[in-house]
Each structure stands twice: as C-alpha cells, then as structure tokens.
Amino acid sequence: MGYSLNAVQAEAVLQALKQNYSVYAPKRFPKQGRYSDTDVIRYAEVEHYEDIVWQVKSDYPAKEVLTPIQQAIFYFTEDEYRASKGPKKPILILARPCDINAQHVQAKIYAGNGGYTDLYYERMREKVKFALMECNGGDDTCFCVSMGTNKTDDYSLALKFSDEGVQVQVTDEAFAPYFEGMPQAGYTPAFVEENELKVTVPDLDDKAVRLALKSHPMWKEFDGRCISCGACTVACSTCTCFTTRDVIYGDNPEVGERRRITASCQIAGFDQMAGQREFRSTAGERMRYKVLHKFHDYKARFGEGHMCVGCGRCTHRCPELISISATVNKVNAAVNEIKAGLAQQ
Amino acid sequence: MTNPVQPQACEILSVKKESRHEWTFRVATDAKPAHGQFMQLSIPMIGEAPISVSAQGDGWLEFTIRSVGKVTNVIFEKEAGDTLFLRGPYGKGWPVEQFRDKHLVVITGGTGLAPVRSMLNMLAADPGFAKSVHLISGFKNEDGIVFHSELEAWKEKFSTIYALDNDAKEGWRTGLVTTFVKEIPLDSFDGDYAVVVVGPPPMMKFTGLELMNHGVDAEKVWMSFERKMSCAVGKCGHCRIDEVYVCLDGPVFPYTVARDLVD
Image 1 (tube, rainbow over the protein chains, first blue to last red):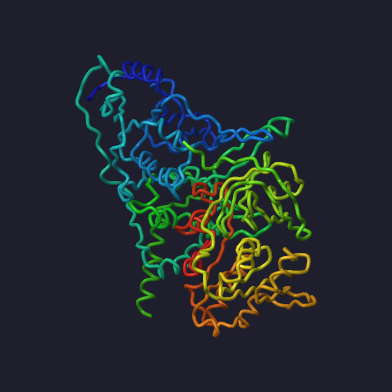
Image 2: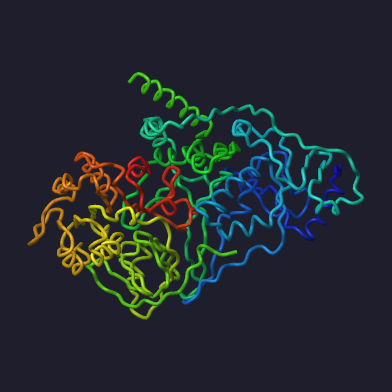
C-alpha cells in the first residue's frame, strides 16, 4: 500500500507511531560538530517530523541505536551480577540501505559467531523494525554499489522524503492502521544504481599474496598520516568491538555496574594485555588490521559479502583526510605488484 | 534467552603462593573444562580477564595468576572464603586424545606452564596414556619458577629439562628453551609424536622455527595463544587475528594455523 503525505499529515502519523514505537532517525544537533559553527547529524529519538534529517547522510551510523557507544550490561553487588533490562517498547529506525545492510553484518558477529548469541544485541534487534529511507545517492564518499549494499528488502516501511512531504510504501501490515485515511498514492522505493565513487575489492584469496601484503611498505604511509584517534571506527556502520568496564556508584565500592563501551582497533592499547607489549604498536599496523578485516577477514569467516558496506563515513570523519576508497585502491596496487613478483619467481 | 557473559559467584578455597608474582587460587565450581581451556574471572568494580585453568579436581579449579594487571592485582587481595566470579569454560583446549599412545614433547616458557599443568598432572597420574613425555620448562630466573613441587614430582615421571634463561641453578640448565630442542630424541619417536609449545609470543615463534629446523613435522605441533579479551564469546573483537578468534577457535591452535596468523 502506498501513500503520499504532506508535512502535517506526516507529523500526525509520526505522533501515532510514537504511541507504540520509539522512533529513531538522523537528527541535527546544532553547533555540536567538530569545527566551530558546524552541526552534527546522528541518530536519536525524534519528537517531530521536522526533526528528521533526510537531505544528507548522517555523520554517524544507525548502529548507535542497536549497539550504543556505552550501555550497562550488569548491575552488581558484592555477591551478584544482575543483567540490565532491555528496551520495553518496539523500535522503528529510519535508515538508508547501507545502514540496514550493516545490521546483517553486526548480527553475524553478535548473534552467531562461535554459536554464542549476545543477549544485549539480540534483545534489541528483536524489537527493531526498519523504515527504509530512499537514498538519493549519498555523497562523494559513498560506494555502496561496489559493496553490493545499495539494496535491501529488510524494511517494514519505505519512505521517500522531499520538500513537499513524504511518499510511503507499507510492506508490513502491522503499520497499515497508522496510515488509515491518509491520501493514497502508489510508491515503490528506488535504489542507488551507481555511485560517483567505485571501489574494486582486491582478490586476497591467495595466502602467499595475503602474507606478503601484510608486510608491504604501503602500510608505513599511515604511520605518518593516521593519528590513531578511532574516529573511523566510531563512524563505521559495522564496527562492533567493545571493552567491558566496571564503574562504581558514588562512595560505595560494593555497588556499581559493568558497562560495555565501544572500543577501536585503531587506538593504542586495543590488543595490549596487562604487563605485555602491544602486538600492533604502529598506526600502519592498526590500519592494516582494520582494512583487511573489512575487505577480507570478515568474509573469509562468515562468507557472503564483505564487512564494509561502503557508507563512506570513515572517510568523511577522518581528521587526517584518509580515504578508505583510496586506501583500497592502494591495496589493489600493492596486490598487483606482489602478484607480478610472485609470477616472476 | 541465556546470557553467555553472566558471571557466577564462586568461593575461594585456598590461595597458594607459587612465586613472588604468581599465586594459585583454588575455587569451588562444578565447571568441567577440557585441558587447555580457559575461564573468565571477574571482580566487582574492576572487570574481567581470561585465565587458563592450571589444575582441576572434583568440585574445584585452580587458576595461576600473575600480578601484572588491574584485574589480577585485586585478586591478590583475596583470601580463602572470599568470592570470585567465574564464567566459562571457553575455547578449544589441547587435542588430548590425539596425544594418546604417542611420544609427547611439552615445551613451556615461564607461566606458560599453567595452561599445560592440568594435562601434565593427568599424564603423571596415567603413565600409560602417552608412550613417553618429554618436558622442557624454561623460566626467566629463579623468582619466576612456579609449581616447584610438581616440577620435582614430574622428574620421576617424565624426561625433563628445566632451565633458567641466564642464571645458574643446581640441577638446572642455563639457556633459552630453544637451545634444548636439539636434545629431544626425535629419531627414536619413529614419527609417532606430538609437540606442545606454550609461552610468551617470541618464545613460541622461535621454538616453532627451531622445531622446524630439526625436521619436526609442522602438523604435529600445537601452540596455545594468549590475547586480550573482554567477552570470550567472539563478540568484543579484541582477540581476533585475521579470520580467527582466539577465544573461539583457540586458544590452542595447530602450528600450521598459528604460524601464519599475523596480529
């Protein structure tokens, strides 16, 4: 079923939805950007239709709703760890195809890897339904088509925003009642068919090539450029890593909570054990670790697609202007060089 | 839905000082880990750490812990009757059944002896299990020696070489464990052997290379890794190397896998 709503009608539907759902969408936070007088656009619960930022890609991914930067996983006393409670209300997330596809990646790790299902992810994921935001092509950092993440059928609603209002396709009957009496108009979402930016994922199936790539001098460039700040992994649609940390309340050292806090393999200490040296002690090594996870290791473990969904947010957020697509191109050049060298032997 | 990271309160039964920095905690639990598996230990207010099981018996497990980190230092203030929180066991341990009726070589560096201790105790108690056991245990110095009484007892059961890296000690050798690889009577094994290596990463790397130099079959060598972990169930990402998660696919790896892993 399709509808065409103006802003007033869309606001009415949103308010009705909000009775039963927590509705999350990209929202503008004025003056909270990293440079003076700039805004940041990130996911948050929306109060009004006008809060929804659809014109541009959000700076931060939709994963922040499902896997928050930090969350309490246990409350403890000296003799008990009690798991925190999950969300009570169902959640509706407005997201572009890259962000929806990213959840299939996060789920492979959180809800399957090693036969363990993470309680905190799963109880959240069970509550979530997606409203697809038709993507107008993103920006010059996007390469979803190259990664095959430009399309999805995992949505309950599809939305096409414009200055005039929003076109809606309802694919999940549970949402039909919210649109009763609204003006009907046929709408089927379109998907981005071509990005300005195209990325060729290097062929790393050959173990000898892969091993040679790991010690290739190309990674040394990042020792000078990357400042190991972790902005790329926070902005990444699929990065899942976290650390657990215990926090006490006030003066009573026997009562507190165990928190799960987003961790970054790009920040020093990620692999460091107590009293031991780091395994990856340079920015270049950390970059190599991240890039190969996104464009080889994840797929080698789980099959199907690569971990990177081509949202381009890491490029967008990097304070040193390191581009992931340019980096992958450098990997391609290095791989070609290595293959030519191996062929000569 | 079950919570795979739920810790359970367990009573500390005893605390034994192995060396100045390494203490063994015996904890009451019904968990039945395989030799070489590990558990997550946690303490309220501090956090969690993966610790290998260094011995086990009916209703208890032992953990030998070095006082180097935030979590482990607080454990050192605990005494019998206090509570520790445990979850696990996790990971893949030693492929013990593959060692049956073979000549077994065990090479350890420092506290790397802990993850093989429960298997060595089993082998000592069941002398018919392996054709022979050759133990090479190296320690940095006298202060670093752990499991004194067992090292003595194992001399009677196994063929042993104990060594300190640089210092002299009566009845002990001086030198890195790699130095003694050439003394393993490989020729007498008739190909029917397995080698277990566990210790700090450089020790394992160079021991592996030295074993290969002496013609040891890479497919008969096993190593146990230690990496940072927050969850131990393949979610937190800290222990991932390439497409492998040490918590799920290890900590014990065949050398054919271990040698190609690049952190």
